[in-house]
Image 1 (cartoon, rainbow, N blue to C red):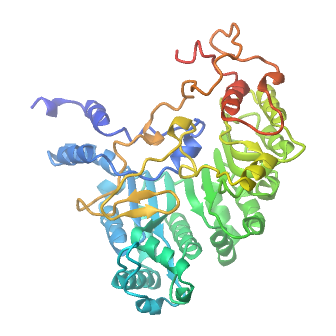
Image 2 (cartoon, rainbow, N blue to C red):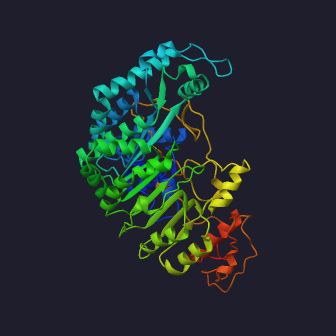
Image 3 (cartoon, rainbow, N blue to C red):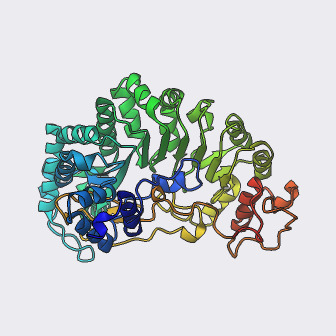
Length: 519
């Protein structure tokens, strides 16, 4: 009888020690929000934690309700017959669906062009790649075609989004299983099969984005956050042609957070320029925006001016702003920061390259002396455009993004990969995802992970060994640490080293010195 006499609040605290508290959502103005909140893939919970919470829920009705808060706060499903069936099962139980705050939609490549001829592919691949099960692809092609033609995904998504009455965040992720990866590799090596079958992301991205958007509108969902770490410019352009601008306006008006990373592709600059009018509609309508991140592949920085995408829009409520992989002039960054100086608390400039004639010291000086509200700035892999180009000529590689944004602490630069039973991977990022159903209602919840939504330390990490320890530290009273003058930055206008940019991040906001950094 002892445990039954405990209050719900105390039981929730006990559960917090088993699986992280799902109610502790990270604030949009914290340093890691833009990088981890939306772009970190949904992790499967630790098996022992998952088993413990599942067992706890079997004890009695009261414990079942308390445990459901942890188990179903985050739901992940895949565009597939099995995935949609699981989603429908969860949505059909209102006492579970009401707890869902984050929904991640895993979308595979769509089979297009000559899909009826898939059976003509050779039954085996070279021995180094292993066997190719043609029946596997025939089944997947048929499933995709039937789901789209019967609008089964539309029906289930509308049902689910309507049932998720506490939904805050929708995330669309690109996923590729091992068999698809083998097929893509094989087709690339054998041009004669290009007309038999093609796996393409743009139609998959376009379809999933439109169906999710329609479901959000139809259900009048409370969701205000949308993110996708691999958005296709072609799909967004296609959606703008198919749908009226009113649709985008209605969705944008509800948004408080938008985090998009556009995938690599041909003529990225041209395709993004074609999206300029759409971005103006969306950003102008998004009056409630608090956090924005727009990124591009690190190895292919965008070469458009900032205002070709942002159109001089000023968001009165903006707290955090981030861009990634962009060739810019210093005055572009300064102008955007200046018009948000009254409220902006976080600024992410990841992989930003300054063009000839611009200097980082001018940007940093403006941020330090004019952005009074700024609590943090992220400068990961910033550089000068000329030096970046020289590195490519020399054959140097830009490090792969850790899924377009993990914590800005370089000690965690690399995503850890984990094998799962079905060997589903998110392409380019080696993310493995298990779609096996270990229980009738496998929500794919993230209970027990270290995602920032569930709290954790989001402050600057301790000074790394690469950060100069000999920088002058004054009588800071726990506040300012480095010499005030711009000359202390050591900006030569040629290249930026790791230790420099770590120093610059702290200099901009007057971060605590080493003597006080651990207090």
